[in-house]
Image (cartoon, rainbow, N blue to C red; front, side, top):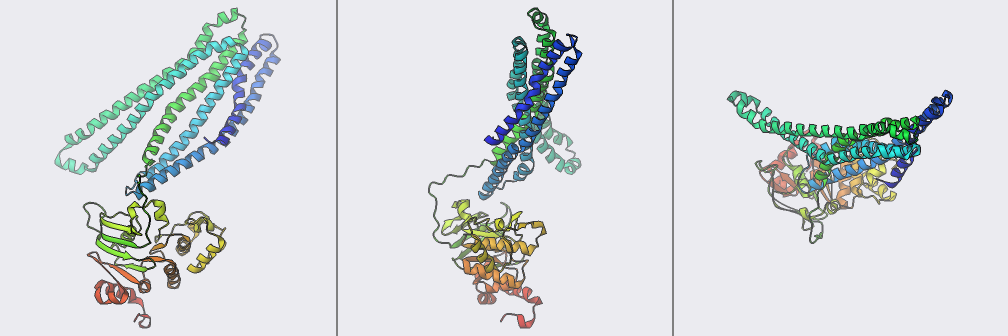
Length: 552
């Protein structure tokens, strides 16, 4: 917990403790000094004081809830960073985290809500108990000595049961998951089961998970019964002890009002506080612990230790005999590809739709790992580079440019937070983007696809990465704007473009042609002579062009 929000929460809990502390005193004085003394007006005034202190407590409660977000939201933000960071690390290590979305959208919210509820329940419990202790000691120390020990006994018994309850709750969740998995396998083959008459075998497949889940639920129900017994000890036994000790208390000088005040502390203080505590911690608390544990376990990915951190030797990109397929039984998308892209070179990648162009650039950028062969950046295997170093080595702009809600400056400097206004101006001028005031708040949903692409292009230009990969990142720009952007990146460093227009291929130093069976690399003139697919692609691209505009 952060110190300042916690201190504010504790400060506003003080007025909330006033009703708990004053209620028994007010009842005792109303009875002894008012109604039993024949002064009903005085008794009514003491009862009216309960209304006043209730207002004070309500103000404290209101301020507590207003400060609750200061604790819950930073906690949620840390969890979100943990989940997203873990998913990114898993992805960078070649282990896609398919459960990250569920943890981000559902489990994090469950943890945040239960965390806030636990703060309210535990704080309210402590506030009430402190108020009862102070109030009962003010009436008569004997009352506190009678009601607090059985209350603490019930509380300790409940805390002892919590460990068992957590283990059984976890077992119930796991049993439910196993049953769901088994049932899903059976239901997915229900037609085959009916056709083959194997209902008995299918029932046997789910029989054990059903029995395990039922046993887990019964065990959980027994824990619920134990919680009820703990509440009975801590909530009702203090009242019974006080009532049985009533004659002895009166014989030792305690008044009827004092005994009623003690009963008030039990019935309207300790009982509701313990009941809320048992229900909150025993229900939401267990969900909080189990869900938080699953989030942390799934998101805690330790980085692989590196004995000696490799250093880049230049910025040449090489693919050596690279093969890649999407799955162990799938046909290779890239098959024994050799390619070298020197620093400062401009390469265009062309080929039919779905042939693997984006796969190749993902391999070049280190986003995918080859099944065979090696990809190096600066003569260092991309798999050996830390994510932070990869980010400063290459930048990839996809077709769907990402723009987030925030100022234009925040969007442009995302990859280079220290960029100055002059550098922003130079980058925008190089790309040919008239973006306006850098402090303007952007609303991505109101921007056109071309506007989003211009923002992403300027952002990439400002990046320190010497290698820029455009995966159809200019498809929503007109040919003139596209040429200006590509020329700017080509003059800046190394540029790899997935071409969707003939002009992109013509501007490149070399062209990589992918045809599924292999690949051809060369300049425009060479490929016109040697690659039938390249000639077919040029014919397709030029189909709508006038003869005067066709290339020589």
